[in-house]
Amino acid sequence: MITLYDAARCPYCARVRIVLAEKGLPYETVEIDLGARPAWLYDLNPVGKVPVLDEDGWILPESAVIAEYLDERYPEPALWPDDPGERAAGRLLVFRFDDFSKPYYALRRGEEGARGRFEEELAALDAILAGMPWLSGRAFGLADVAFLPWLLRARDLLGVELAPWPALAAWVERSCRRPSVAAEQELVAAL
Image (cartoon, rainbow, N blue to C red; front, side, top):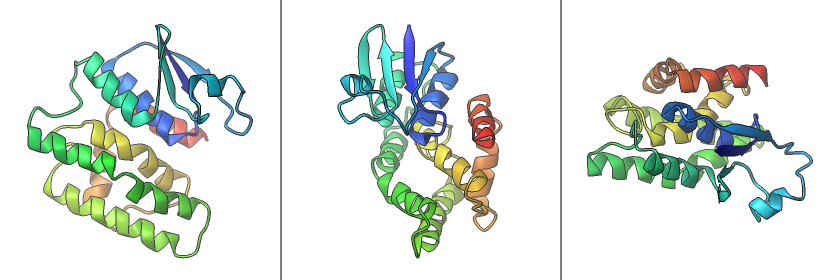
C-alpha cells in the first residue's frame, strides 16, 4: 500500500499527486500541517519536508525523486519519452527547476523586482513550448508535472496573467484537460 505524507497547499506534493493519478495508483494520504509539523515527520525525512512516500514501509522523500521512482516502478503509462534526447532535455528542465521556483517564491513573498524575474522565467518556458507541445517533448510527462503546480498557483492564487505567453497559456489549458491536472486545479481553487 502507498501512503503519501502530503500537504494540500504544497506544490511539491502536487507533483506526486499528479503522478499517482496519471499512473492510476491508489494511495492513502496523511495530511501534514506545514505550520505545525509533527516531530515524527523528521523520522521520515530528516529535513521535515513533504512529500514523503511510504510504500509498504519503504520511505522516500523529495518530489522529483518520488516521481522518477513511481515512473520506473510502475512503467505504464510512461511519463518520460522513449527518445533519449527528449528525455534528457526534460530531465535538464527538472534539474534546473530552482531557476524557476526562486522567482516564484520571491513573488509570493512580495519581494521587489520579483514579478519581472518571474516573468522572465515564464517567457523562457513559453519559448520552449513554442517549439514543442509539452515540456517533456511530444507527450505529457514528468517535466510538465514538475512545473504545472507552480503555474496553477501563480495564475489562480497570485493573479499572474498567462495571456502574454500564448504557448505557455495553451500548454496550461491543454494540461488542465488531463484528469490528474484538473484535480489539482480544483484543489488550488479551494485553497
